[in-house]
Image (cartoon, rainbow, N blue to C red):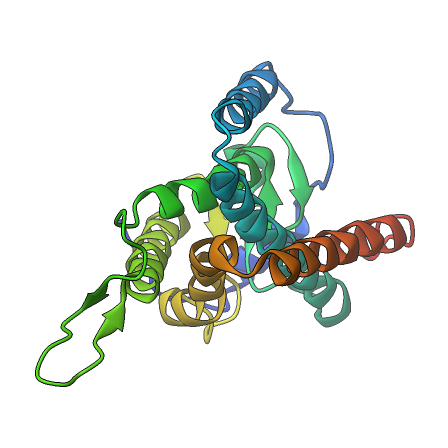
Length: 222
């Protein structure tokens, strides 16, 4: 059921070779429903003036897009990306490593992670006898990263190959450390940044995402 590492097999490579990025062959109306849910969540938070939730969501989602772009670039130049999604598992593939459903989930993941933090976000665990302890934001990021890495491990083991890992050195551990920890650090820490620093982070992040998409998609790189 769970798969912890890529196997470097020809079968895995063949699955990646068959991926049709931005093909509408499997398109269906769940695309619209999922989009409506995401809009509802964001506008509900805006209506309630819970802007910290919006910052958390956008911070993680921007990091997600930068990672997906980098993964697609790796795939273009090395032959295979670090991770891929299969045609059979989705209604629409945005980039070789991310489908519509997955991307929309990540648009909400930052909000979910931030909501799960304690009301006192300065709280520290295991702080006693002069020890500073662990920030609740850091511990929350580690917990969410571990959960998401295990979920990805399950997806990599599904019969429709929801996730495809080609390289034998890529799997749960590098996903946990290099991918999901940065995702949830962004969602948990960015909202509490000083206003100027937070604004600079989000504008820089999303400007970079937009520029990379505008430049790399027409060039056929991603």
